[in-house]
Image (cartoon, rainbow, N blue to C red):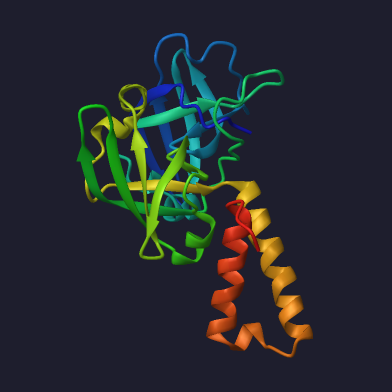
Length: 234
């Protein structure tokens, strides 16, 4: 389990591609690997990975082919910078929100807008089915960083606002249009949406309406569920 508070950036020092997986050696800032053990979990760009070897401040991780396909880790090259967060310990402050490190989908950056005090970054989800869980003012993990959703539009697009400190500590300061990021939906939001969907579908079925076979009914179910998750009235 992680908190979504990125602890800094690390650099890919070595890549070794083998059958069905790829090994990464990642160089961490001095002192950030203190007391870490083989088998420990570290979030790399929001993806929970297991430490397989330790060489000072250089940690090794094995990543299976499916993870490389489903996340942005397959795009990493020698010298790539990544966000990292070591797993939370009992008693740690939860400054962001609970993050599992299990990526749901990726998103592409479609627009970056800078102002005097912050940066607005807009994303398009690679899989639109997750759009119903992305709600204005809701939590979302982007490359492992706990962020608040600013706006949502066009079903699969949303934006976030980044303060200078976030850009300094994370890789977002160097991200641009066309770059791919990992997305993890906030678990509580997902649970609320899916629970309300199920209840509404059952209610519609009792009324003789086939939610599964009606685009209008299905849209109503999603709208009600999203409203409930956002704290709106049903």
